[in-house]
Every structure is written in structure tokens, then in C-alpha cells.
Image 1 (cartoon, helix red, strand yellow):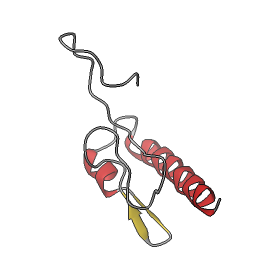
Image 2 (cartoon, rainbow, N blue to C red; image 1 turned 120 degrees about the horizontal axis):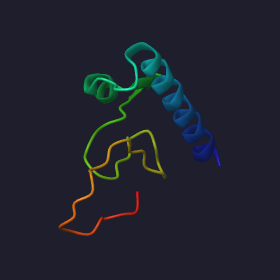
Image 3 (cartoon, rainbow, N blue to C red; image 1 turned 30 degrees about the horizontal axis):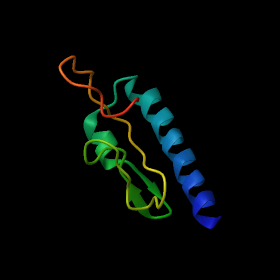
Image 4 (cartoon, rainbow, N blue to C red; image 1 turned 90 degrees about the horizontal axis):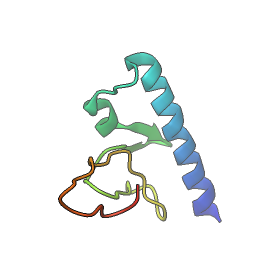
Length: 81
């Protein structure tokens, strides 16, 4: 239960960080801002990392991913996102 509470707080902080960033930079955020991420209780939480489904170290169960690839008509999508 503790992990769920902490992860919920991290995710809320991520949305807060994104809103502040959008207010500052507009809707297209600089890549550097997303790779640097935000701080949660002294730990850096990047929002962009490896491609595909990705989970920062501070999250133990549910991944976070804010990037995706455009559809490719020559092959099926790996997931329905």
C-alpha cells in the first residue's frame, strides 16, 4: 500500500511539473526539460528515458511513458496506445 501512495504522489508531482513547464514554454516542451525531469523528495525523476514503455527507478510498479512513435502502415502497432 505504501508503494501505491508514494507512486501516486510522484505521478501528481509529474503532472504539476508538466503544467508549470507548459505554462512557461507553451505546449511543445524542450527535450532537455523532460530528460532532466523534476525532483521528488531529493530524487530526480526524468520523464523521458529509454524508448518504449519505460519506468524511472523511483517507480516500482507502473511505468511512465510520455513518448510514442507514429503509426507505421508497414507493420502492426506493438500496443494500442
